[in-house]
Image (cartoon, rainbow, N blue to C red; front, side):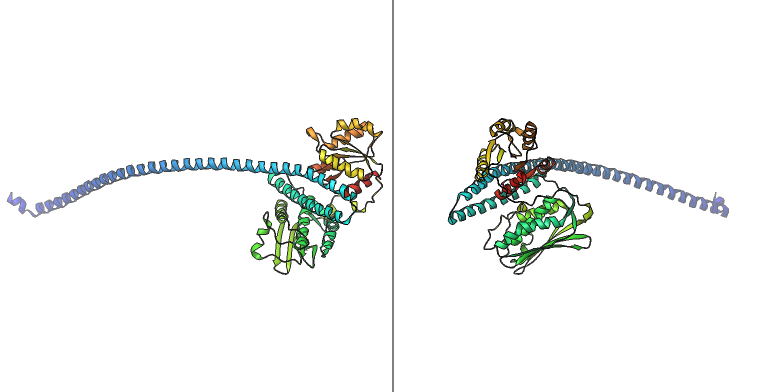
Length: 452
């Protein structure tokens, strides 16, 4: 045995086997250690997964609660939005209805005042009548402005954009505002233009009316100039005045409702609705309104519009220049008045009778057909309110009267309805329209024109 251990080959072999066993042992120990590490890691991952699962459950629960809260908040906001829209719609509808109804007695008051003015003989009485008339005009302007704002808010006023020539519009505005400017000792220059723009006729006229009225109202000396020019691919209508100017801090506020400046000594302050309507109409039409002003030197408002081809302007019949119509003799003219408002009917009849007319009043088409026999023949003209009782229209009343008489008797419509639809209905029937409150001079001129 001792000899075996002393054999070098045997020792070397044993040494090699020992090294080999150590390597195998080391490998086995390494595997065991890795296995233990993996088990520990797996257990750690298992614990981590459980913790994450709990966190996910907690976060999911919190998220669901948050979503439920958002849904409840959205439901509350939706209900509040519906209530606000319903309240706004109701407000606009009520305002439109009330304004329309208020124009009826206002019309009667102005007609009665005109009839009274023709009976007055002294200068003092005439001054009192003029004072009352100015107050009624102011009230009429307020009601019209409120009506326009209400219709915009209710969505009942929609633009009809088409090519429009500026020259006829500028001429109408010159005729309208020249006497007002002259009464206040101001110069008014409105420069003619051959240009055409794309806009709504009624809205554009109202915008420029308000800009001119504002400029004249707040200018104490000097004057007002309106003109237009091309700027790049736009047409700019500019209204400049020599008024007190507007401070920079107030230039945005004046476009809000019931914001107004200090009027001139010869005019009353407005209600602060004119520029609000300018901004609202311009926004609906896609026009831009710019203001530049310097305190003590005046203001300039610029309205930017899309250009249009003058050749595309439709050849519509322009409104009759009543100032150019001669007042024909109305004495003895037989007038059939179809008006459902008693006070308005009495006031209109008094005014017409003051001009020498023979007037028969009636509240409806059916009653009108009965009254025709009392006139002893066909009337010389028919005046009918557009909206009669029980949904009846003055247009159909005139049509029934003409059919009954088998005669295209001259006729006109009077109405407190300022909508574009009402104007188009009358235009399609070939009838002239006078808006309430009716201006007596305009009524007399138009009636003379129809009778001649």
